[in-house]
Length: 320
Image (tube, rainbow, N blue to C red; front, side, top):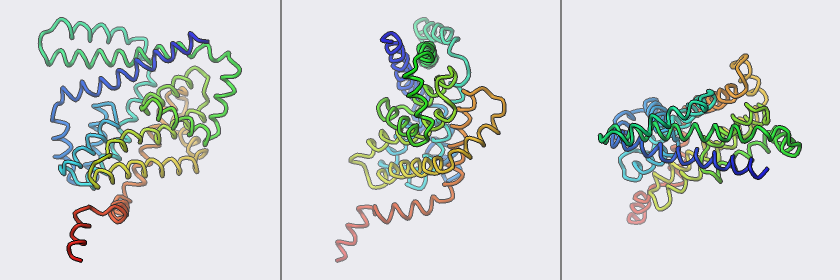
């Protein structure tokens, strides 16, 4: 058992290390282009959502995109309304990683590791080196998943672990587990990735996997809220919108949990369970955006009312 735990921890550390460095490496390649794209193509809500999807897919981190957005809002480069659309898009963009994780490509990670290593240490070109880093970190990411996948295999024969996993089939319990795990490791992608691996190995049921996925959506809000500390009211409202959107989406997901599971099964047809869970992740976030994109003006008015800009308060005080 100690060997299993250590292997799972090692795989998780590799995954989190790769996610953090992958985002930074891609940002170094893109440079200020990401900020330019965000500013240029956010003239309306739909375009803001599309920008959120595209940039999150490129950076492979919804938290990174939302934090960048909060920084731009705090710098008065973006308006709160534009930021809300980007937040919605980022929630869809992050589901792309689930689809990739569901593909059985972990066994090919050594190829990416070798290719990234060669590009990084053979070429003197900075651009090629940056590309090598990205490929190398993708290899580390998939190798981390591969390590966790092999580590959890023996857990199928452990009765106590099987009983513990069955408790996640209760939607509330499963969501709580997903939220706590994501809060600890600060990566919803890692939480969903582990759920996909456990489902693939027959340790976690589809019900448990979807419940954990729902909870992960809430746990990922903590780092974006931290980014709003000492920020402007507009930045704080962006973080609160992210929490509100995720929380309301999760509540709806729990209320309609079993009909949602049935819908996912119908859409996924005969797909393997890991692919079905990845589809559930994508469908949940798309449905959430489609439901709440029309309520953006209401959210904006409500948050502006409870958190008016300080300049407005100052004007009122001066007027009195």
